[in-house]
Length: 150
Image 1 (cartoon, one colour):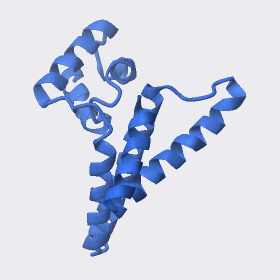
Image 2 (cartoon, rainbow, N blue to C red; image 1 turned 120 degrees about the horizontal axis):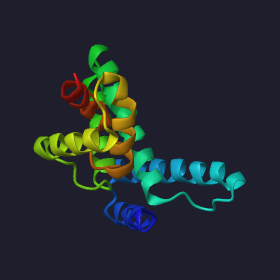
Image 3 (cartoon, rainbow, N blue to C red; image 1 turned 135 degrees about the vertical axis):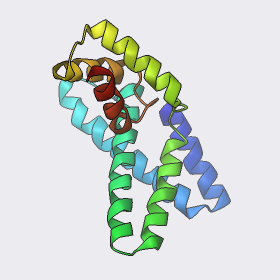
Image 4 (cartoon, rainbow, N blue to C red; image 1 turned 60 degrees about the vertical axis):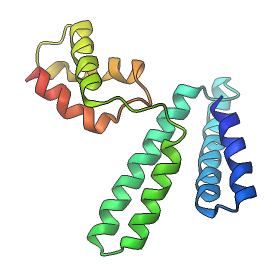
């Protein structure tokens, strides 16, 4: 499903001559191909959609880190380019959960894990990552989990 959307997006970007989208989609497809090749020794010909979404999340995280560095280095044009790439990548992700939904999911995961303290945070995060891949930014969810456990 995601692979088809990527191919269609690349064709659309070529037709509309949208260089930013085309460049970003090509990068996404390249990383996807690299992951597929890395999975072959395990007998997997193509990684599943949930792993693709995890890959997209890590790509977004890398770009956010780059934006911070470019902003600190007084390079707003590069930060803007990274932000545009984030927007393209996010267009392939499921709709992000709002704060109330994240809070409810965290509370449900805490109950499911039987978590009692911050020591159990790993269990809670594992449940959240399994159930909500692509639907929440886990770097922003971590403080919510700590708050509910602490």
